[in-house]
Image (cartoon, rainbow, N blue to C red):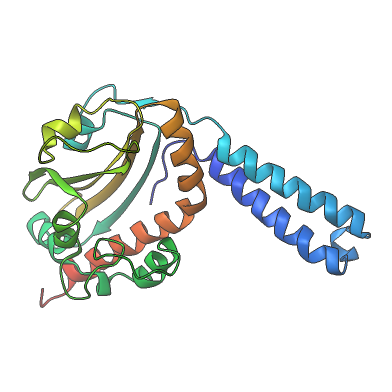
Length: 256
């Protein structure tokens, strides 16, 4: 599993949350074994945690650019400010692995229900990738609801995209298209794209990589998305990891 992109903001947010939690609990009974001997010290720790969370939330996100496009994802999101990458090695041929990517369901992904329930803040919500039917391929659910199939090269790569921030009052002029997604640069938007890439990794083995990239078209959208992304990043990473594990199990299963 690999993590790319700036994660400093995420680290600062979680340091702040931990400090704030410890400080709040310590206000009830200062734990001397932590070096906190008075409620004043506990209150200072709690306040410091709050400040760290704010700093992490609003820390500017640097822009990353693809220098030499290699994948379809590079073609659709060559510039981005937020991303995560995860990989897994599967002992199965590419065709079988790609079929597993297309077929895996929500119920095959460990912790999927728990993590998406948390992302929905416990609300039921409309059917979609965060509230998927149990026995339908998760990618079919995604493309049938809020995601657009941007590109597909069978047995090699599939790319899906969606808008995660839309300006208030904006209405699309027609059906979303891959070309429209690629050319979207109007202020106030943030778009996300996710791919699954399969590559040979030796005799009878395949490397599966999934990357998610988010491109915010202006500073305001970038700040708004950072406030959302940084707290949910660990859960998002865990979900991608369990998703890849589900693909591996299905692809390596003798009966699949």
